[in-house]
Amino acid sequence: MKRLASLDALRGCTVAAMLLVNDPGDWGHVYWPLEHAAWHGCTPTDLVFPFFLFVVGVSVALAILPRLEQGAAPSALTRAATWRALRILALGVAINLLAAWLLPQAHLRFPGVLQRIALCFAGVALFAIHTKPRTQWWAIAALLIGYWGLLRLGGSLEPWTNLASRVDSAVFGRFVYLIDPASGRGHDPEGLLSTLPSLAGTLLGLRMGCWLRREQFRTLLLAGIACLLLGALWSPWLPFNKNLWTPSFVLWTTGWATLALLAFHVLIDRHGWPALGRRFGVNAIAAYAGSELMQIALPALGWQQSLYQHGFAGWMTPRFGPYLPSLAFALAFVALWWLIVWAMDRRGVYLKL
Image 1 (cartoon, helix red, strand yellow):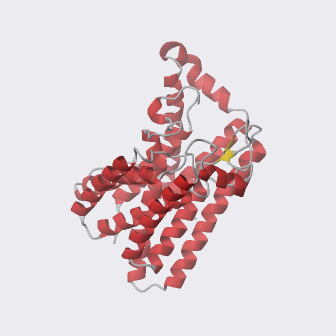
Image 2 (image 1 turned 60 degrees about the horizontal axis):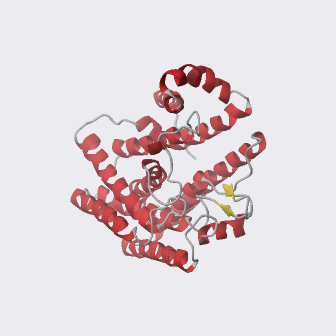
Image 3 (image 1 turned 135 degrees about the vertical axis):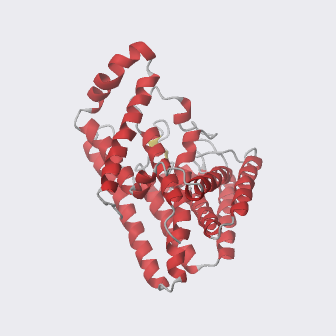
């Protein structure tokens, strides 16, 4: 199957959204749709990372499965996928090490966004290469229901005391995203145990990608609606929660991602709409990792606050209040990276790990 501009566009829009929500000028003044839910709940920002993992699964269906069907050796595909996952994992750890070294306010963290992408990509690739669709559906059900059972057996779903946080504290110690100063317990939104439902969401992307390959658009539409309904029905007993990556959250975000995939495909591939976001999509890891390095470099060099104050807040805040300049900085950050990936695309430069 030829490369779909719609999938590159959806991946690229997701990466652009990642940069937008990760780079406000002032974390104390962010419009609510650009903030994560404090704990339970789901804001538009909470959709961003699940969308990316969903696209990872779709990409496996469109890139790895055709090669398998054309006779590529499963062992060769397994080695290639494993090595790619290890490179992404190593890059994520290296970025965290650099942040801990250069930023006085940062501490070393082992889990992270790229690390979770690597683990989910490796898991889904292995499922795609070595198992049948029925096995994959059973794995999705087992991951979601099994994780629900673990959370319930673990007792509380509250911060610091939930099972996922306790596992992260036991495995990683203080090398996690947040530490509770009162109890010393840790929590990581990309932690170890919550990677299990993340894998389920990525596997759902694999299955939706297979339906997309076969042009089963009605099935995709119904599947997206079904996921939304199941997630909503489950949420009174198990709330949406990105920090814990609850199964209801997986189904809810997968539903929206499936409908977005279908809409992008129909509008771009079928009706010729512009593939907005495509340039971010074809250099997704480069844009995300590069932006993370820039997030480290600007404050480490002492430029971040000066740039924000003189370029945005100093003249905008008296006129518009503190929220608009914070958003303007984030938009300028996204625009800068769009120029970078636009130039890379024009020159045929595509960084692949």
